[in-house]
Image (cartoon, rainbow over all chains, first blue to last red; front, side, top):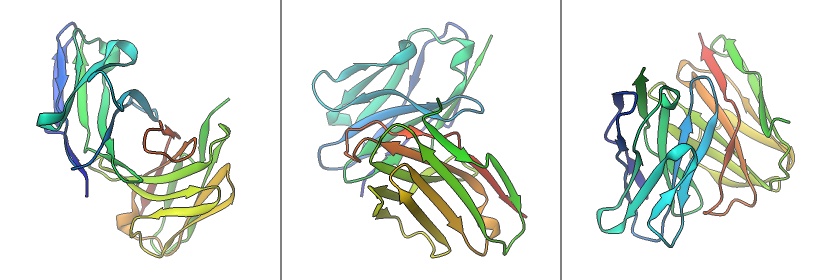
Length: 111
Length: 114
């Protein structure tokens, strides 16, 4: 069965700092990868997704993620975070019929 | 113009009670889901329905019974509530339920069992 690991449970950054959130998955077959974000008090929404092609995927709000197949990773990056990026970030993978989420990373950006 | 809506937003109840959570999507999607997010923010799928038919049932206790009267609605009924049922329950939908599809989530229902 597939699984997703997010090793950073809590990340605290100052505004303008660069962000990288780790995501590793375990699944032997073809995967589809997602990053979802949950802003305080709001529902989950899609940041970006990877299915095939260019392993560097650009999403909304300046986020990007790189799929490295050899490392089973799909890390999320942003060159310069803003206070409004404070949220919970979830990596997810589909391999067989369902979406499996990681445990999430809580990002706090201080002004 | 809410895409996926859930009611109620908050639900506080006593152990042993029976309660329902409703979900509706106006996106015209064929597939709907229920997820449970526990206190550690771990989000796990419970059920998925495609065109009113059960597709995924992730070994959820029989006390949980999803009902889909039509493809725009997927309600969750919980019998004999237990303390461990306290969580946030998210409804979601996608076009056809395929692996590459984006899922659209509702705002969540915060259930607290006392």
